Image (cartoon, rainbow, N blue to C red; front, side):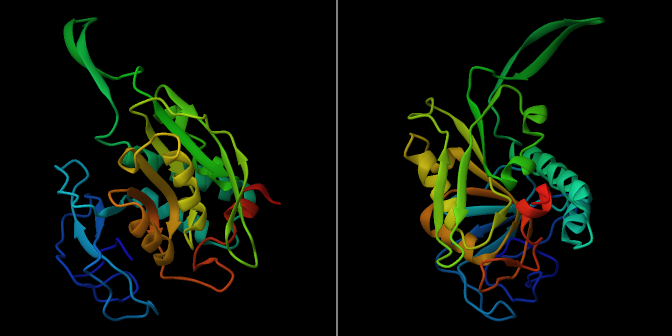
Length: 280
């Protein structure tokens, strides 16, 4: 499942896509609409996946959801730059960590567009009365990084999202079964009504970890349409699993890679984001 549009009718992997594909200027973010009746029909993907791809500006009126999951891959050159830094196996730990944090800042900026609650009014400027609009501090905005690499991707969340609260989930993946195991849960028993939640998971590979995290949040009273997922890199198995389990979900990612290997790592990916961020 992909959300990229490098050429008409083809994905970044050379896979031909079914569905409505149209181009817009490079400044406009792309979004993928995942639909169970559409699928990959050829290419180097190695498996079929349900998807349709469509381009749209993030500031345009959003298309009707019809229960479909949307995946945004913003084509900003700085996002591409930081993804490239993360790709490089020679990137040292401090630079890798900084690149991950900068990528997270940009993706959170895009993910929060047209989604944050606002309040309008008037204030006195030095030159006269001005109409203004602020983020409404009465409406809860929550950031939930999945430990440990999620801490780095979410590092600048508080600097760009006013009046946020941060909660933490610790999940590790069993190396043999590739199934998620929750070892830390710092979520409240119930989230405030109307909460908007950003779940931060740098690597969407097999999808087990992010599905477990979303379920924990939903169990505490948040509908999936009030949840946005932010990741550094995503792969088809995770996106397929998310689209099947959470219709209407929005996912923002720096790039979508073609495959996941037998060990559950995204290829070409970034390697182990936690190890490379913390040097351990």
